[in-house]
Length: 274
Image (tube, rainbow, N blue to C red; front, side, top):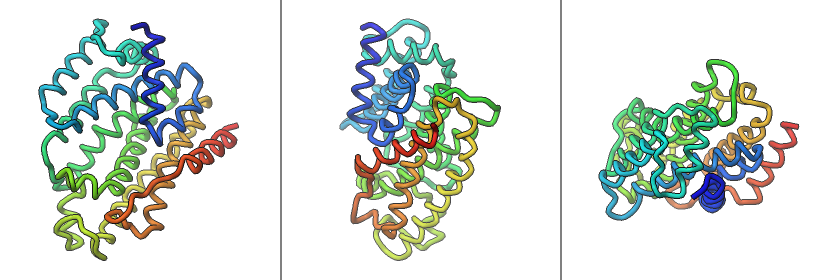
């Protein structure tokens, strides 16, 4: 498969699966759009391996071996690799980032209960902050603090996802809300109650602090990427506010933004960047 064909495949995968992300991707110049779709496709394929029935360590280790081969220039027979390896080279994305992503996905292979916020932060770093750091390399940035701010942004996104997906994760025997926080609010397991909603409010306030701390990143990325970053932040922070406005009723309803709402946010971000 050629690089152009690989990028085309990745764009289609991102269009079908990226949901919140793809709206912001569309605001990027074509070269950056292609690259970010290729990196997303790598992450999507990796994450899907952990969610498939019968997922196991061998499958992810095979994916890791393919990654190492692709980064060394020996492309395995999968449509993601030509575009992915081109994007990594073109935008000088550190290779270790992608191994960190696989580490995070591997940690989801077994049922888990997060014990402390430090443990949760490490998990969020691997599955969301590290991808954020790879994306900021594609965006282009100035200033030594940009990668750290991208990390904070990724942490905010993942905390938002965790709050939204408590019910789904619980059904998969994954409890990402730290045991120390459950104990603080007198909650044994995820189940709708006043105490549980207070716990989610606590986690939402924590996520909000990371959103606020990451805001200076908007002024550090290249001008051609600012609208995309603004849209991405606004989509996720608006989702968090919707959960807050819905009194954290995540065990009984699924919170989401409609395509029209995300389209409006994308349009506003484009106009503000102009």
